[in-house]
Image 1 (cartoon, rainbow, N blue to C red):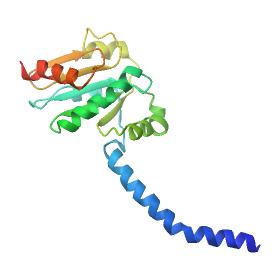
Image 2: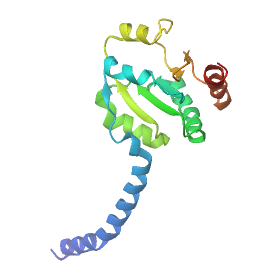
Image 3: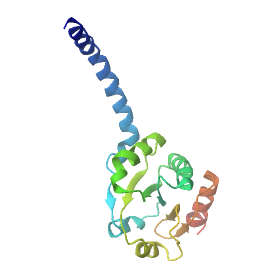
Length: 176
């Protein structure tokens, strides 16, 4: 009985220290995941408006999944470009399973430090929506759309590095 009280007393005395540690870490974590606290699940019709713009601002929409090695390898390139170009809008369209958002997708994004806007596309009629995005798209990922209100390009490949991505953006947006 004395041993149980001692353990309980010890645990209670460390609680304020643990609470402070938890609070500091959760504040730190919230800065990483602030944009991905809620990952909306869209069907293609609700995603479609995000694939167009009336502005001359550069938009990059990247279709990807955690299980796609080239996609995961490309994420740091998109992250770096976004960090260097805060005026660019990046949207990561995850093709992962909706039931994995909390257990796999959010932890993955946190671990990788991804703060770009992420949505999950859950539309079983891929044969239909793939062609609506680009009739030349085979459905392979990663697949990236670079666009503004005047120009648009489609890329069914992973970008090799930051310069590769910048070259494609310049060809699409700035050179036209």
